Image 1: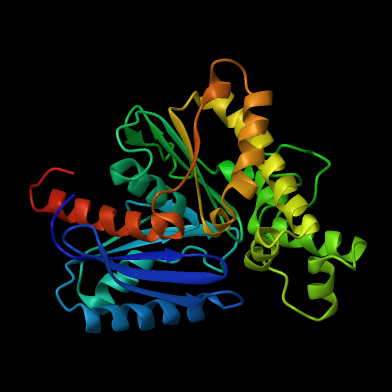
Image 2: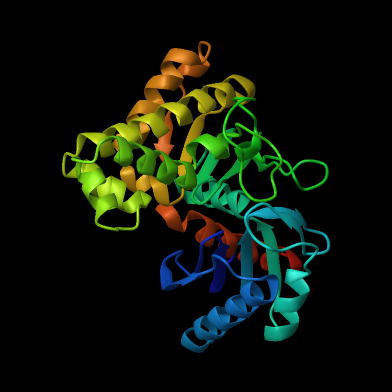
Length: 323
């Protein structure tokens, strides 16, 4: 995918991950900034500030890749709309390219993540891949017949907004639906489930944490579950079962070689993925019910790594190379 160093950015609803991918695909620079609660202008200011830091540390960078959880017009480098960020009709490619004088690639963050996993992660060599990136929301990425699938308008593979329960909880931000996969199995849904469970079990580790004013987060739930707190274990199992039920439908539709789960929640490991796999085995049709469900090899860095890989690939193509 090209040999030069490239910056990859994974811009999420609560945090921004910026890294530099070295010539041998190693991450040689990595920083995290908080992106939650910012205006459109503030998001772009944070992005430019983090890029300045990365370029100061790695001045040999040749290209920049941006993975953003929004509908992307790739021809124009435009963020058309986003569910969990205040970006609408923002020409992010031109803004960043003009500011730093480098070629810039822009894609949906989950598309970037599945590109990384397909290139050299758990989906390497697979022809058909379904990936969900689970954080504040849920993004979806697809590899179909060996190539990324973006749909006719660039908005394809928004798998997190597939409705699985018409009477379910409201989805987030700009999504008008109820019962989307994102609404029941995202990091935000996990936190809501944990708070509700803690209120019902005040003597549990999770209940004590809530009473003492600890911020309830996926990380805290995972830590308590790993320490044996039964309520935290059940919260992760509940989210895992919901996720698995949704994955069984995606398995039936796409018949993938592998389903990849990325994003911050995979820190929960088998406490989440075990129940998800069990639901896929129980609910999907044969032979799709045997599809492997794997944690992303690049972990929460998949979107950042994929954005950098995409930038290098597009630079190589522009120079007459092979993507």
